[in-house]
Amino acid sequence: MSTETNASSCILREPCRQSTDPTACTRLCPSYIAMHGASGNSGRVASACIPRDYAIDTITTAPPRADQPEVYKSVDAYVSTFTRQFSDADRRIKSLYLYSREPGTGKTTTAAAVANAYMTTHYIGSVQRGLQPSQRPVFFLDVNEWQTLFNTFNRPRVPDHVAEPASAKYYAWMAHAKAVPFAVLDDIGVRDATDAFRGDLHTVINARVTNGLPTVYTSNIPMDELADVFDKRLADRVRDQCAQLTFKGESKRGIRK
Ligand SMILES: Nc1ncnc2c1ncn2[C@@H]1O[C@H](COP(=O)(O)OP(=O)(O)OP(=O)(O)O)[C@@H](O)[C@H]1O
Ligand SMILES: [Mg+2]
Image (tube, rainbow, N blue to C red; front, side, top):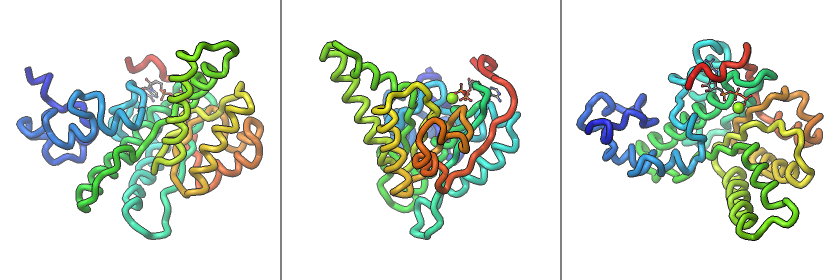
């Protein structure tokens, strides 16, 4: 059946010259496999850990594009700087802070779409330059889920068979988030965090800023109020080379299935 073999959900579909050729645009395409794996559930998209609901959003198809025109004007300009990853020039890729007080306005969707843009620019640009594309150019850290892992292995009397996998995953995510060329830190405004967890989040942000690695943050707290949640030093770190984009309107959750 064609539905089993076509690659209509490939994140390379927009830039790919072969996407209009049904004999070439299949799940056997080497670039499809590089992005999505032979099973459709592995490859670089899976390594990036972008949540399934957002995994194939792109900045042209993302639902919030229609009613956040100002944000998307800035997003388009921002994404056009991603080719800087291949140049030695001093002009770095900056960070973005996607903010709205209101939930459900499209911040996470947009962060995932921007991350996918970085991933496709990295893959295509590497192939064009005869370079080996990185297996994990991007990592999406869901800060709430990361905190849940932390709480799982820090509960009193938690059995080893529960604590050990949670802690292994927690520290693997931390290592990826510190080191990948491009990261999303989704929902950084965690209010009820312990000092220990906050310290780890601090370590991640600090490592990225110190090494000049770009990050997209999403948050329900404006960037200039972050010092109330974290300490002032960390709030200053986040603000380093970072532009805030404010999403307007009310929650759209439930509009798209
Ligand atoms: N402008 C929009 N038009 C249509 N659907 C939208 C729009 N914005 C968001 N959505 C949909 O609403 C849902 C929630 O969006 P998303 O998770 O990106 O919001 P968020 O701003 O990150 O929310 P939160 O603050 O709760 O984390 C998604 O299914 C998304 O596709
Ligand atoms: Mg969100």
